[in-house]
Length: 403
Image (cartoon, rainbow, N blue to C red; front, side, top):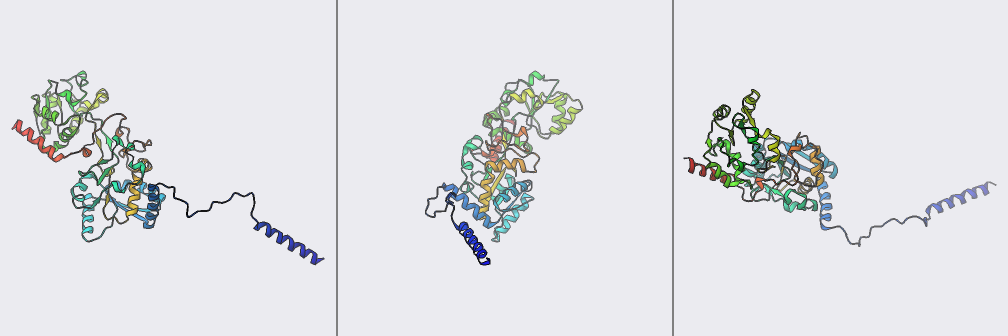
């Protein structure tokens, strides 16, 4: 009897094993990789996939710069978690950082990948010393290279050669001329008749302006000289305007406007804060920028300002981690990268992206965003833009007329 039972158990066991080892005729066949099958990916996809693998092998990325290197750390962490690359970012004085870069390169050491700091330092020292490499050859993603995804249908380069320093974000200026006027001499209706700086030329008002010979006034004069809707024609007409008093002394400008010597100040230096204090003390002055009617109807001097450390990026030549450098640069300029920049930055009011397909604005301020359909001038991206030469031309013109 035991023999029979043992035989039954053995038979059942063998039957179970046989059943387990037999293929199920109803099961779905599993796909098997065919090494001879053609790769259907597009060339950029192959390059992008390979770049990710190589970047993970490098394992890290080094970024240095100004405040952006600090406030963008959450963004870099997001990137690092997604692609398996540890990003080390450090911020500091632009001058000291560039001193470090140049000293290391002179010693044959190449320790960084990307530089994010204000435009001045890069133009003055990094570009002339051959520290940066061209950006465009590094761009792979079609959505980054598709210019229809960018404001005005172009990439904004802010170095003279238009190849080393790319701007991906900018604040939009309202364009209004923020000038103070004497409310005893001009009525609300008077100032609301102004829609452009060109309208000032048709008024018989008395104006006060700081001449372009004063170093502190260079910004205002330069913006008008290069603005496509203002330009040298307006500048020359203003310099020749007989209703303009030329003055450098800020205290005298403030006192004269309050006392009614002039109707309106335009392009003066060092007066804004004091005028605000005097207005609070009931002085008869107001700023046309405070009038919503004028703000809505103003037509020219609409600028994009996008050269701060949080607006631009440069790729260092001979980077420590070339693949990680290229990977981050492409992702940074992508829809996802710019969206996450809005959301993750610790900057309280980052400049809005220059991409046109980003709809999540995060911490950006509404007044800094571009108005759809409105044209803006981006001076640093203007062909032939040379603020030094422009200022020299304006000074020469002013001196030829007034001296």
